[in-house]
Image (cartoon, rainbow, N blue to C red; front, top):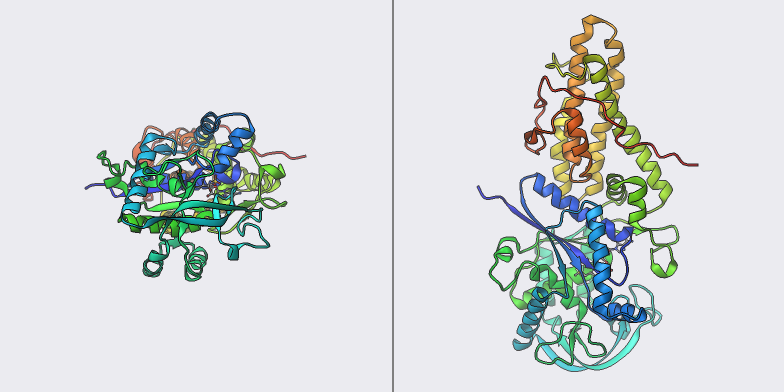
Length: 511
Ligand code: MSP
């Protein structure tokens, strides 16, 4: 049988500056979905990239005395390095300065113009450069950008416009008929009221700078950076060409984006696709923001948190765990290094780390690591086995609902149950008498099997941990026991030799 396909994207990031921990959140979350879908038997395409055109980049480059291309080339190298360090498993990386991308943008722009969905007109409007967004006067707040609160500039120019208004009713109908299209529901409601308040035609070209894709039939103009950027999701699949990726993977299953850019993905992008006669993505998921006590992270405030520094200090899995656990579905989370340390010490060092080291340590001490076959189910066994057996289904369900943090929560319920099981069964007492050797063996078998379950289920979230634990569990050469299908209680092989290792997550001592 052919595998089901799954296509997930991150936003393409602006290389106006290096990425911070907030950007890392979006990509780590997308990576977790991608890995989870691979683990559960899908053929996955996972795309990320860089959004390299526009005035913001142009200005950032020039203020440093570089050409925009020189400037972005260097920053994009940094993006790739960061993703590598965070164990991001993207299949492709698209840059909007690549030919393969420019071709598709020009083609679609021209098509929409030929069919009169794009037209030329005089324009006067307010532009927010940091957000690369036009606003009509009525939407401004105290004369500033309603999104970021910064000053806007008045622009007067001949421009091309896209007839968004023409598609508003069709889009509303689509949103109403497809409740999964925009998630979570709070974002969906925001979008519905935005559309109901009236969609204006969108200015889709600029003449005041030239760092962009030229309008093919009128090269004085460059294509508006958001139209350029959104098109990456199909240009990267070779839309219009014949390499088969587009046919195989479009429509996207998830466009994962931050809440600030849901509007572009859930309104502008679908309308462009409708006009171009291309199927719409299945889902746009808008996650919350990672905030600081002092508010938003921003270079100008000098409060950005550098992911490299955190990786160096705490390790990749720990950072991934923290990000994925801390932000609830669609809601904001507060970042602080103290909160991070507390979580790592509690969840990783104490709960998970102790479970693994106790399990391996006792097996080593009492049986020289050899696991014997488990005996009768008794006492708390039943509850542990039942919880372990149902956890994959619970996690699967939460992943379908895009609730990453709750999915981890479900695994940690199993971790806690297993730790309680150790206390209840007290293997150190069982070890005192030869009559309870069989029981001791059963308890340790159950713990080893629980640890196997936990490593498999968490592998999309913390991809470096499972390959560290499997050799200790003696199953590193058994890929058949690393799969989702292998999560059937009792597959842990009798006679396996387990051994102790270094602590998985050492406690972080604070002053
Ligand atoms: N270039 C556009 C996206 C174009 S997609 C066709 C863009 N780039 S961005 O670099 O500014 O932001 C990319 C993503 O990072 C967005 O999803 C944004 O929400 C996310 N984040 C930026 N700061 C963030 C936090 N502090 N917390 C969580 N996510 C954050 O927008």
